[in-house]
Structure formats: C-alpha cells, structure tokens
Image 1 (cartoon, rainbow, N blue to C red):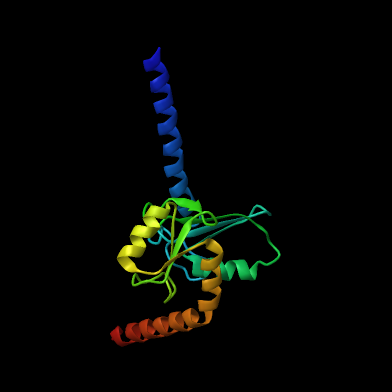
Image 2 (cartoon, one colour):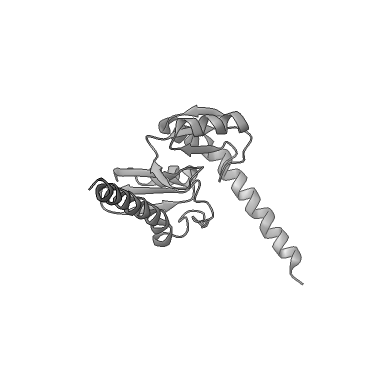
Length: 172
C-alpha cells in the first residue's frame, strides 16, 4: 500500500513539473518575439517577461527594459501578474516575489545597467558574488529601468545605426 501511495505522489509530482516545463515553452510559442524591439524571447528566456493584464491581454517582452516601456504605455491597464525568466533556470517566476540583482559586470539585455531576476535568494547571492551588483526587490529594479530608459534608448539607437552602417558597407 505504501508503494502505491508513493508511486501516485511521485507521478503527480512529475506531472506537475512537466506542466510547469510545458508552460515555460508555451509563453514563448504564443509570443515568440518582443513587440518593442523584435528580440527573440526564446534566445532571451533568462530575461524575458510576461505581463498578464486584468483585461485578459498578455504582453511578452524580452527584458525588464521593454516591460517598463509596456507598463508606462498601458497606465490604464492593471497587471494581474508580472512574470520574469529566472536567470538560472529560465522558468517564469513571479517578478514581484523574485530577487533581483541590479548592476554588476554581466552585460544586461537592452540596458547598460543590468537587471537579473532569481527565484531563490541564494542564486542571486551567488550571481552577485561572481558578477557584482546589488540585490533588490522588483520595485527597485523597475524604478532603475525607468531611470535608465533615456540612456538605454540612446545606446540602442547608436547600436542599430552602427549595425545598419555595417550592413550597407557589406553590400556590393
């Protein structure tokens, strides 16, 4: 009898874990690229974000930079859930309950001032030990994103201009 109960519990655990893994890929299949910058959300699964609004709309984004843009443009919509890719596992986690590392030597996505999310504080601390930065909560990371927006937009435009110039030089 104990073996049957153990096997049932194990099977339920595996099924729930399988559905979690399926859900990770499902948001990327549903929204494969960021609506603001066009970046591939699968390639940036470690920084991607998914905002679920109370009007039943969803926005899939590549990073907290683009999520900040979306939140600013949708002031009249209330987020029901804001999820972010865990840097280590790439699984979507609650952005508001996660541990963020702001800054450090690891280059960020769409920003000079990196912002990475972790489900576990120990993972954030290990990352901080390796790359520097400071541990923060979601509100601090979002505020930093808004403060960085002007510099980041300038950086992105300069990079795109350089890339366009390089492409023009390659044409015969």
